[in-house]
Image 1 (cartoon, rainbow, N blue to C red):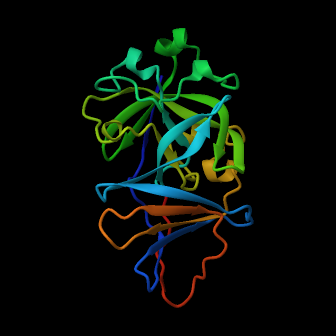
Image 2: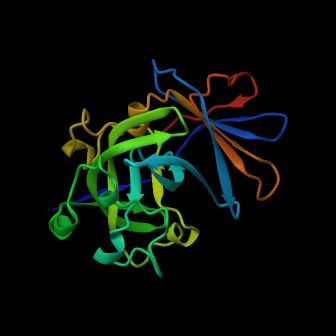
Length: 237
């Protein structure tokens, strides 16, 4: 069985430019306000910002991740993707998630991957195919939860960009869409969004004004002052 879900690369956001030339992006979920966590972002050619602050499994496996406001769950590139279909051109990246090394993983055994129901995920870079699993996630030192995620086990040959940078996860930090062909088939009590599972009520992204500057993602950033300098746009995810 194959389900399809298309993700936007970037969605509408709330934007604020301060006098230091930074850009702050904010998204809100009513009623949530918890511990603040700062995540340093690496700049890839002024096109992609990534981080090594997300871990999965027991013992923890660090994921080299990008954060996507157009989706709502973690999408993790699997070490067993190489055997199922060539997800990686040469070898499996060291940060690729290996379910067999996690004692807390729940999902499809390696021998059954070929017969599992696949979810088709379409990004601006192309299409990948994934299966659902559950495991423990930790961001920074304090934010942690057990939640469902999508494990990529195959991709179209045209999909490019993420693996060439050594990235092994796309972490959805948007709201759960009210309706989609995938969401309609999910028990949302079991398939909570990444933000809901970790009780993240607001996040901001700061991007340096100079080329190739690093960035910063702040989860539960209650310090931001949304004042008159703000240029606001509706969030559409």
